[in-house]
Length: 198
Image 1 (spheres, one colour):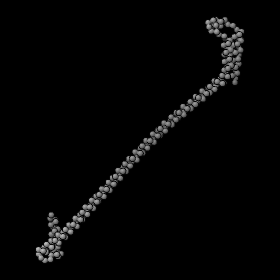
Image 2: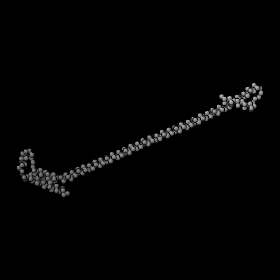
Image 3: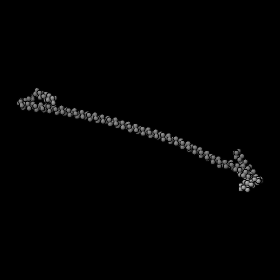
Image 4: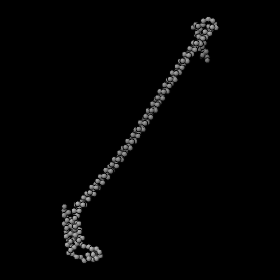
């Protein structure tokens, strides 16, 4: 408040003094300056400075201070906005980094699951192939055994028929019954030795 009062007193003093000086004092060099095309009234200039000094507290209070406060407020808002923007930029960078890490982890996990599924499928294929091979071998072995059993049975049946036919032929040739066990054993042994020598 003291500052405003000081400006008012000085301003009013200069206004009054300047008006008085302009009306009561005449300086000769001012006429020469006026002849050069520069009309200068030193008293009015001093009075104008006084008006300015008297109005300065009003201008300062109602114009300069609000303008300064508005500028400071705007600067503060801009700084806050820039700080927020930097924080958001940093946060976005962090989120991007997290996203890229999650994406890489997801891709690695998917690759791992695919590899695991492929390995599992290959193992299943090997197991099924081994089972199929084993089953096929078993079927071939069983078929061979059945063929061998059928062959042995067929040979036994043929041998029995050959013995019967041989005895029947010998009976016809000799003319008596040759169907006894001893004769049957002799023909059977003969056929066995004939098969071995072949």
